[in-house]
Image (cartoon, each protein chain N blue to C red):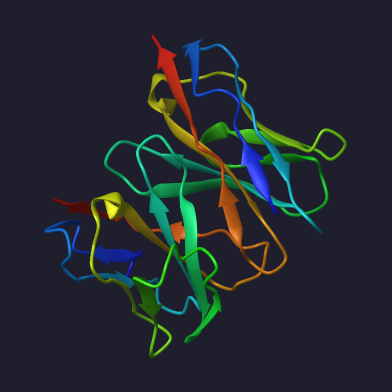
Length: 115
Length: 112
């Protein structure tokens, strides 16, 4: 596609439920990143992939969070037993490579609200 | 650990005046520095980056940024601000492994 696509754009879920957030990166981009952005703060790193493998998942806050990228393109961020503190905008970005010198292209985010 | 500081939550300037949005960073190894802009209800957009070479980097929409290694700074600048430049600006540092850390953002308001 022309840009990074994230679905859904908004998700409201009840505390304790399971959610999946999807990211479709720019075609051909091998690196994919997930961030979480809370109000008044910058994007907080969660995990990034090079191809199918997670290169660094040190930002995932706990074992309720998991992300996959099985075919090296689309990625899904999965959150189990959601908590109200998980409410935030989840951002996905992709870049042509993982190298430090490449800029990221961001999707518009998924706004997750846990009630 | 790497970090980015944007000391000003808000910057206000009059249209036509020069603007500066400040950023300082900390990183191990080579610093790769970026500025992104976020307009209301839109995703973050890349503005410019410093990788190596000339300390003054030029980017989109007339913006530029100056890399200062001794002060570990990467301030965003524009000689003449436009009302349409009003947005939220983020500075980011990336390490050799590809991990990015963002500042908390600075809201720029340009008044007519």
